[in-house]
Image 1 (cartoon, rainbow, N blue to C red):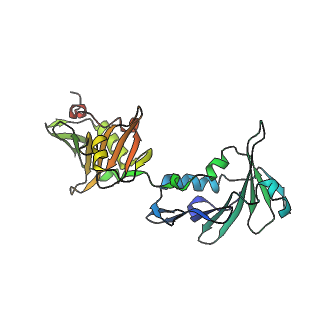
Image 2 (tube, one colour):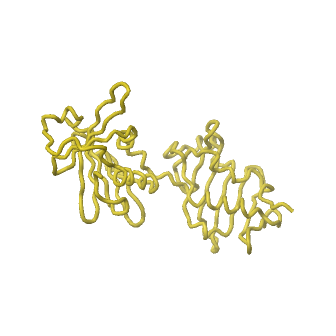
Image 3 (cartoon, rainbow, N blue to C red):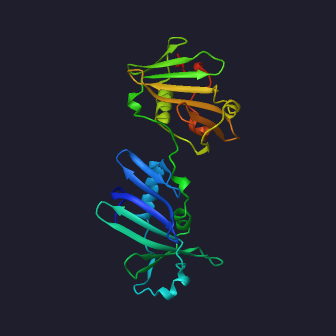
Length: 286
């Protein structure tokens, strides 16, 4: 194991290029992670993606074999370390681990080789995992938070559906399930409402499309006014989520936006398959 720690103990990761210039850093606090880019811009980091990356560079980053315990800097170029492609520093509350990373191009019929020189030692490690180079070279934007809505699904008590050209539909949590209260009073499909709540409790875009869309773009993408809009409320009628769903951007992705946010994202429509096109789709079978 290159960095002798576990993901939960990591407080910060700093990645610099071969010249020592910052590429990005990731830090974690009680209220979530922060991404700092090359220009010192701070953004919320995506906890899920950061978590996977931390697993990759701690538990899963291991030596296939040890090349030497007496590394000679004269051999640096042979191992892609003159200069290195990256330097990674991993911090915990008690320790700081660091390593220089070098990549050697794959020869015909072979995978690329990653060489790792651990800071403060002359130990050179080799790793031949073909996916490692791509994982370590992820750009800073990979870690930007892609969350549209996030809340504790147990708090959801009311859902209001707005479909363009139709009357709004309201569904309230009832004993043992859900009940449609507008535009009619009917029993609702509990499985479908529960699935919608779970989806919206941690809704994430596939990727961000625009940081700040114009009024013309929002109208064109059918986000203002929205083709479909869903608000989720708690017992005190506090809004937990307010999400607008627009038209298709292509055969797979649909435009999506949180009402209070400026960013517009693209989301795989299969994620939204439980959200109804008509309120009648919420009515429980007799």
